[in-house]
Structure formats: C-alpha cells, structure tokens
Image (cartoon, rainbow, N blue to C red; front, top):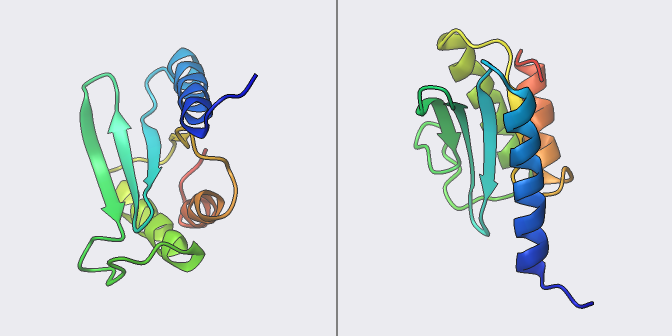
Length: 119
C-alpha cells in the first residue's frame, strides 16, 4: 500500500496532537513548525486558546532570517526557553507536530531543555 509523504505526515501530526490533548491537562504545549527556510516555535495555552510566547528564525533579534539548520534551531530553542521563563512558564508538553524528533527538531528541544524548560 503506497502512502504519500503528505498522508504519513498528517497521520503523525494527528497521532501526536491527540495524545497531547489526552494528557496535557493545564500545561501549555510547545508547538514546533519548520518550513524549508525557517523554523517556528510557540508556547500555546489550549484552555484559553492563546499564544503565551513565540520565537522563530524570522525574529530580527536573532538575526537568523532564512536559516534553517541545527544551529539556528538551537538558538530559537534557547530564545523560546528564555521567553517562556519570562512569562512564568516552567513546564510544557512538547508538540513536534508531524515532524520526526531528529535533527533540527531535536536540536531545538535540547536547547529549550538547557534553557530551563521541563518536558
């Protein structure tokens, strides 16, 4: 049975998101999205439907526009950890979406953990 990459991505994303919704409770989630040119991350409170903190390679402070490599992901991870701490958030659930926990996504997660976020 040939399944397209897009369909496999959609299944992974739904599987991860469904599991997080079942166990998340009151904790916010750290949602990651990566495109071919940039990487984005948000801390989202699903109860209120609000974004509490966000960072991306498009942020002028980070000076990473158009870079999408492990080093840029690590800088974005450290920045989101700092912004989440400033917003009073210590613990989150990591939502990798449909992306595999490897490479850039893993680098971002490791940097966020080193920055003080617990997940």
